[in-house]
Length: 201
Image (cartoon, rainbow, N blue to C red; front, side):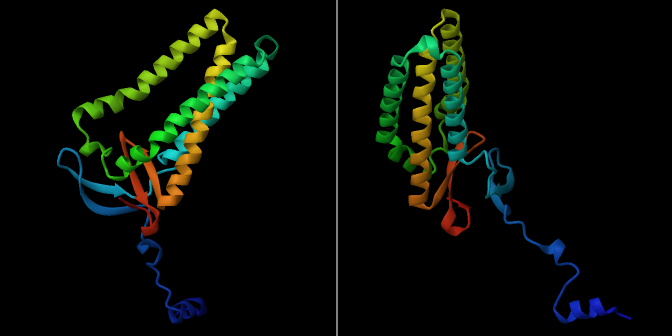
């Protein structure tokens, strides 16, 4: 004999298997030609870190934090020329980004930076870009610290911070204008169309 609760659920169309039949929109099992000829599932909603604007946000915030810490620790010996020099260099770098970002993002949207579509030379260049950049940054910081050039550290961090924040703001505006999200993961960059529920373009 059914209990009162089970009877009410039956009349309301409740199904005991409903919870197990829920579709997870985060991963759609679409058959895709993976590198090497393997089939696999395409993740249509990448994690928080894989969204390119979030990577820019963390990078810019990190540079800003280092610049602020440097200024607070050695403020008496720096003076303001280092600050203005850093801001000027950062503005120049940001201007360079502004002049070329439309073309670069259009290439990403066209699928040129999906790893399977890249030439061997481009794959190698992208694989080495971050390690080389981090190594050069570490060498520069070590040289500045050893030489006591704290003004140059502040200026350098301010320049990178300005470039990072401008890149972040412009990227957010570009994504909103095109109703898409830039994704950077596993050596690839591509876009997800927000108008169609986050499907890969």
